[in-house]
Picture (cartoon, rainbow, N blue to C red):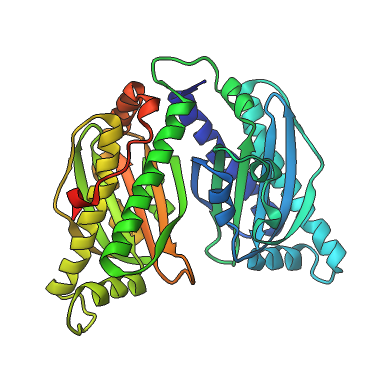
Length: 398
């Protein structure tokens, strides 16, 4: 089963155009200016998708699609956005009227999102009446994603408003065979879906190796919480990472493929690393000794992560010494994106989140940005039967 990457670029653009159409519909209905923050297509498991809804209250609509493109769309508003929309459209209405207003808005916005796909395919896409959703966590998750224990493609868009507390997400979860048929005939740039799955699993194994390294060096029990591979316009990568402040390392890796690996800790997690690795009290101002501790851990995590890739791909991949960084996530990624944008318009962004098992107080993100054309090349040569060779002997790392 082959995936045409050029067609995937086209459909990613369609998803962004659809999100912009949905945002324009919301602005027209409510008078609130909105903008599309980021759009991507991700390959992830249902459990990774579930994580996006953990711990929050959401309202929205689910609409089923059929005919030329089977699947589901899920449009969700967080609690603040839901209240703003309900109060704008039904200020003195009952709860039932406010629910009706959310359904109406969701239906209009989703129709705008899907129309561009139908126009591109020069066909019709059947749309079911909207089903109102309200709840916490996975209560609002797309049924098709929750029902299958396999990796799925998810088109994800995040829309925000600077003036109001508006933040909503559009998820489109197409049925796999239906999407591949819609992508059209495969060409020289096509990659088998199985190999994309294998590479995504390789990334997860690399993140698990990195989590083991954290535990070995710091004593903090950690595990991989989320792992996904996204195909995203290169210029959208900083927005995808967001403006949260991080401490971490940046390393460039060379070989096949080449690219960058970024390891980001939130401030409490970085301080926990320093407390575990520096045998004396520190002032928390990120002295040379404190930076050295973060770089040491980043270097070892990178070795475990990259060496697993090299084992499976049967290639030699080296990496530069770690560069210490302290800034907002988007600002850390911007210079990397600036360099990569000279040769590519889209990127495969490999994103893994590591957290502590108990209370989630430790937070680490590993972001890999391989060169797109080189990644396509190595995936073409990837032997799927080598997928289980990601393990790295700790004695070769420490």
